[in-house]
Length: 285
Image 1: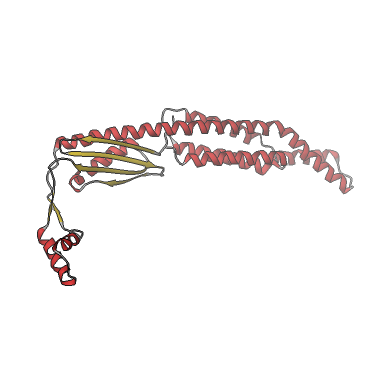
Image 2: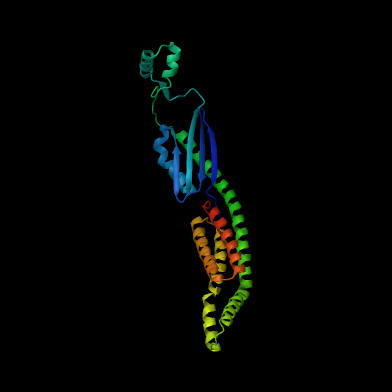
């Protein structure tokens, strides 16, 4: 079963004096890239929180936010009176204004609030970790749901590719006959005498260069392997990407050897289906 790298998980914990919200969003990425927004007081726990995300989500561009809202009397910030007064004096020297107006302007300036860094309450941190686990569980469920949609689309396109391969198989004999007729017609137009046995040998050699038997067999095997990998327990987008490359290689070779308009038209359709698979592959974990 495959997973999408796109997902969202959120969990809120209400403590006696705080509301803590965990939000995790993920998008596709070749590697793991975590962007964390954490209040200063919890910075010492950032590595541990990042490891929880890495162990759970494995890959993707992750936006992680830990938001704290004070709902009780508790506060860790105080007005820095000395800084505010200094700003008010400077503003009074620049322009006249009432004390309230100057105070309003001063409070918008940097460093007007000072925070006292306290120790992290262990019980509070345990609540944060539990909220993290819940948010990670929700985002994995989201990824599973998105992955099932991708899986259905992949299987539909694999079926289409299989049907197109059957069409290639059905017209292959006609293709070789067409190539043979064109060569014989071109030779007759030259109006020269040739050795029939030598011509037949050269013709067989020429037609062997356009034989696509191996490509058809390999393409069929790659399509089966892709579906088998889709149905495996672990999501492996990189492996599916490698198989898709091999599928593309065989389709390109068939196209270059076709030398027959109806088959080349089928090859164009196959390439179109494969491109759609590759586009969706970018979202697979």
